[in-house]
Structure formats: structure tokens, C-alpha cells
Length: 135
Image (cartoon, rainbow, N blue to C red; front, side):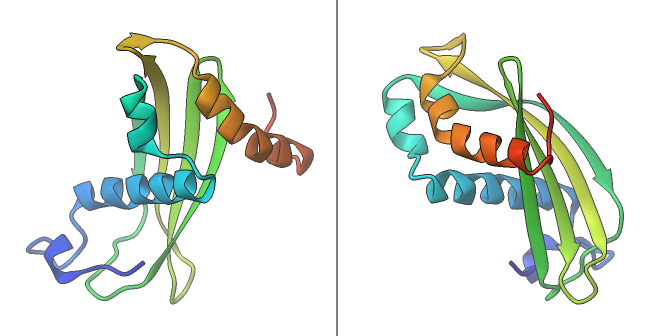
């Protein structure tokens, strides 16, 4: 992706809130790649919502910078933890890291989602095989 002028503040760097947009877009593209429809699940009363975020700003992105958004996922109880890293494409410098915890609400109540568990299972199993995460 690339940084657009309007995402920058008066200092000429990406405003901190825009990094959250980048990570959200990455998660949505991830869901899309798994053929998961956020809208269809919502219509059935299944909603994934952010419960907690831990953010680390490392280096600033600037207007017209291209960047790479990388993500891992792991399951921790009812939570799905997305580990996001954003790198400036020109030099692969780490600019931002976030741990984003999502939970699912089933008809408005906290609960386990079979839909999300089934969609994420192949990815979680593959990462476990590769030793990226431990359960």
C-alpha cells in the first residue's frame, strides 16, 4: 500500500490513527482471502470486534512512502490475536507493530464463533507446523 497525502499531519508524517486503518484493512483483506464475508456473518448475528490493542510506533512513514503490511494470527482462549508489522518498502524498516485482540459477539454476547474458528483453522495449523506460534 502507499501513504496518501491526507493521511499525514502537519509534521509531514502519517498521523498515528492511520496505522490502525492500515491494520484493519490488512485484516479485512485476510478475511477476504479466506472467503469470509464480514457482512454475511453480521447478518447472522456474528460480529468480530476489537477488544484490545497494543501499539508500538518505531519509525515514521511519510507521504508517498510505499509500505508492506504483514500479519500473523494466533488463538488465545476466546481471543484472536493479530500481530501486525508495517515496513517501509524502500528499506524494509519496521515502522509500526501492533497486537490486536479480537473477540466475537454472537447475537450481542461474548462467545466462540464456529465460523471464524473454521475459517482460521487452516492458517493457525499451518503456522503451528512452521513453528511460528505455540498454543
